[in-house]
Amino acid sequence: MSPLRTSRLLSEQEVARHCTKDSCWVLRGTRVYDVTGFLRLHPGGDALILHMSGTDIDQEMEGPPHKHSDNARRWMEQYYIGELDRNSCTHKAQTLRERRTTQGTTDGHTQQEEREEEREEGREEEEESPFSRYSTVDLDKDLVDWAQPLAWQVGHLGERYDAWVHQPVDRPIRLFGNAFLEANTKTSWYWVPVFWLPIIFYFSWHCFVTLAQDSPQVSLTPDFSIPVHKYMFPLLFALGWFLWSFLEYSIHRFIFHMTPPGHNYYLITIHFLLHGQHHKSPYDGSRLVFPPALAAVITGGLYMALLRVIPGVLGDCVFVGALCGYVVYDMIHYYLHYGSPKRGSYLYNMKAWHVKHHFEHQRAGFGISTTFWDHPFNTVIPKERF
Image 1 (tube, rainbow, N blue to C red):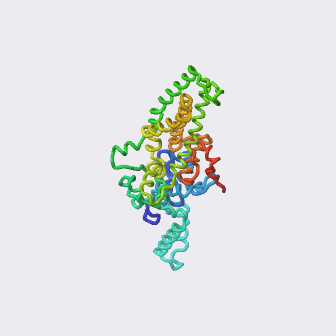
Image 2 (tube, rainbow, N blue to C red):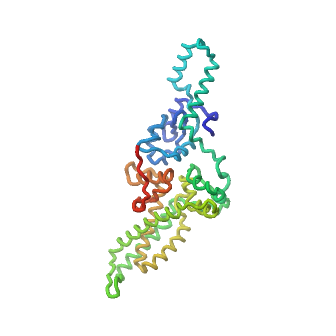
Image 3 (cartoon, helix red, strand yellow):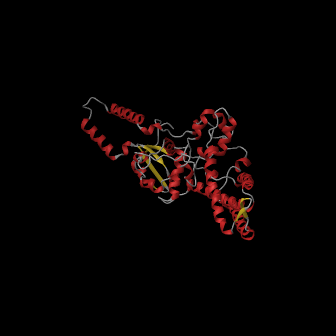
């Protein structure tokens, strides 16, 4: 819907009534938005929006403490439901009545002419208003047909793909027409710990017991070696977790955020299936964690490669630490999208960091569970200045 098309008119009193978690409306200028569904997703917490319910949030959108991006403003237009009825504004209505009473028809204008002037002024205000730059999201006029599976369409976008995929929408995505293929691209978050935690517990027990019984030696030179005591297991475990954090950053930056050539249909399709669909629909809850079956294949390959570098039980110790780091990463990633962390906490700051990555800084902020590796590789999201 265009901003200048006939819209549903809503009174001030009606807007003011919607101020709870069950129904929350806000204003930008005269545009009314129903943001109820976005409350729990808001990176700043639902309390910030509820506090401003029924009022104009434009100043808060501009900041400080945070100036919302063009993508955030475009995203908000998906919740547009109508226009504030100017005649319902008590002060404006009273002023208009006084003007008509005092002027009457002595100024040479008829009442019909006055109404025409008011409509024209309203149109000019909307055309000049910054709110009009962001029309509501009309998926029927998008570059793809949302009624059809997207997997085989996105490759045809060519050079337009990168800009399109980084303009997020609030709706689920259907990738495949085949029901079996589609179902296997979706995973509920709890399957990750259900699948991986037993494996982590087994490997941890196996490593600790093996170290206690065998006390393996690490050869530094042909004539010198040091024993590895069972109490070294936590250090090896932590080393594996640390190595995972680097792998997490590297995969996210260099694989998930590669820019496929516009002329290559297949690379664009692969990118969309790997990560592009997540950026297009960042709150699709069924695709926020990696399917365990596919992850198991990749993990098996990484495990075999690790054992060639660090053989035996020492490799197992490092591997189980890395595997635990992966599970924590997947759970944090889900929580950053759907959780409501306490204001000022570590996860609260990580949620704000990750949302900025999605909506404004897609070429920075690649850390999910930690921002550690963004610093040496110079991909830290810049701080806002006002």
